Length: 167
Image 1 (spheres, rainbow, N blue to C red):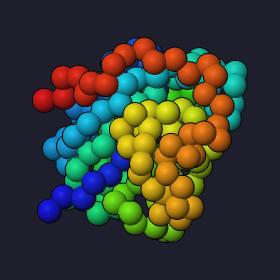
Image 2: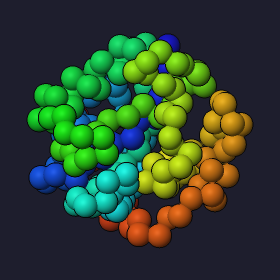
Image 3: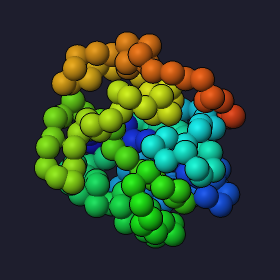
Image 4: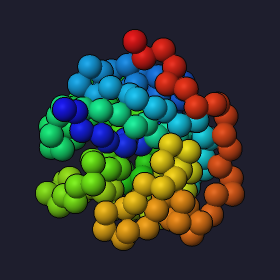
């Protein structure tokens, strides 16, 4: 039986929309998107002197365990052309595990739930489109409650909820 995961996708270099679609195709068949949020254009976070991001969250199913999933997502990032820059710097594609079932995992470099998701509007807004009542296994707050505590100004929905052509 596959496990349910939520994964954040982001891109702010090149053809950002095409990068998100390529990532959705490349993660398969190991990770199968079940539902995709709308895509949002969002201001940069952490390091502000860079282009705006496109961000999206997917609910997916996988047979991969958490560490194998992380390795798979990092390989997809590399295969799509991501190169390491600096923390919070520009990137062609970024794939982050937000939740893996209701598991709590602390195995550096893997932290699930994602340790900063509750402070990031660019993650919470699209996650809220998919699972507003999903409860954080550590804080016990729902996504809706966490979303009420962040500033969503500057985030603009640019497409409807659609997983695109991922087949």
